Length: 219
Image (cartoon, rainbow, N blue to C red; front, top):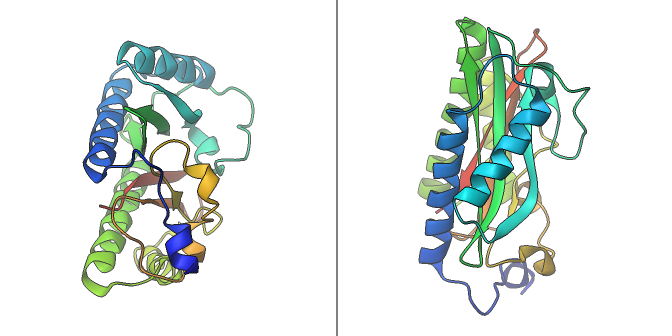
């Protein structure tokens, strides 16, 4: 009963609409990547994201636009950025967009690198790799949310990175998902249903002050 309540949806929810919201949000992430360049302030990048989403015809933003440069890639969603850094010629950043399209919530985030820093590129790649491995584990094993994050921690460590377990995924659905009070994916004991949960992976470099982030809908 509790699992069913935690995965409840509203009256307009349609899985295909969730997939469309996911696709539209990834389209926006890809386009904003083309607009962010060295010399830009973090605040300027956030403003550019909002302009782009308006141009693309979003219904609304359901969580604040998040762009992190450099050391701020170690910050969790609820932590404010340290200052307003300018993107360097060799740097790392991530974009996290939560957008409503046709009354359904898209949420996508990815990390990008400018310049030639090998460690930064490896970190960005590792976040996507760990996500893919956890997603496949979900598909093949039917593991619950907590078990998925235990697996994510194992895989991150095996690859030489630290997993930030303060970031543990969350619900989405037809807007607003928040009325269902489902909590974090990493605290959900049952196997998450497709089209309802965002898997978030945030890694930290073991010695250098930066990290990487990747998230997508489990579907």
